[in-house]
Length: 173
Image (cartoon, rainbow, N blue to C red; front, side, top):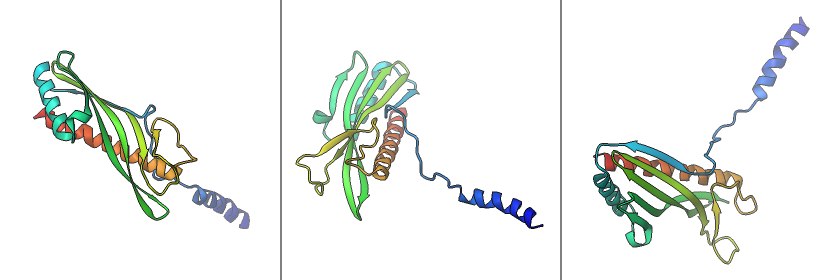
C-alpha cells in the first residue's frame, strides 16, 4: 500500500515543480513590422491621406519626414516611442526610435516599421553620452538588465501596433 501511495505522489510532486514561463514574449527578427492594407481609392488620394496622417501624427514635419515622393508613392518618416522602465526602484524614461516607410499603390498601403533603436538617455549612468542599441540584437547584458530589455521590446511592439492601428483607422475614413 505504501508503494502505491509512493507511485501516486511522485508524479504530483514533479508536476508541481514544473514552472510556467509567464510573460515571455516572442519578437520578430529583425525587429520590424510590415502590414499591407487594402482600401478603396486611387494612388494619389491614398498618398494624400497618408501624408496628412504623418503630418498630424508626428510633431515636427521638417525633422521627421525624410522622403516624400508623390510619383513613387513613398513616404519615409522617423519617429520615437516613449518607454518607461524601472531600474533599482527608479523610473527611467527613454525613447526607441524607428523608421516608418509607407508605400502607396492604387487601393493598397504597405507600412513598414523598422530600424528600432533604443536610446538610453538616463542620466544616472556614468557614461559621457547616451548609448543606442538596435532592438534586432540580443540583450546588451553589460548595459541593460535582461528583464528591462524585454520590457523595452514589449513597449516598442505595443507602440508599433498602436501606430499601425491609428494609421489604418485614419486613412480608412
